[in-house]
Image (cartoon, rainbow, N blue to C red):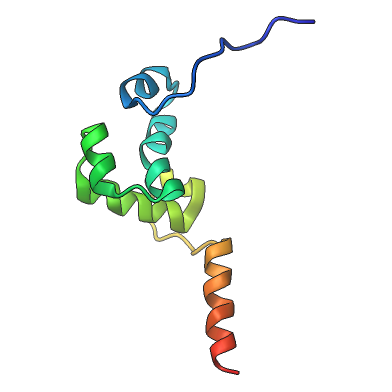
Length: 99
């Protein structure tokens, strides 16, 4: 059996370790916003853990939630809203209320 390509690490929520292990700035941004979007952690809690600006983190988490991975990258022009499971559910709920 071939040796693993990557060294195995214990899963952690320790921001210091996560930040140290990230390879790219975009990966660090993703890890900074992921608990807010995925687990519903407040932007305030995450901002304290990561020493990020609260309003910036909140705004960027909204952008990530709305645009997906494109939300990690700066954009000069407005992005189109991507359809997600959440946006489709909201659309369906709105249409059902018309019945």
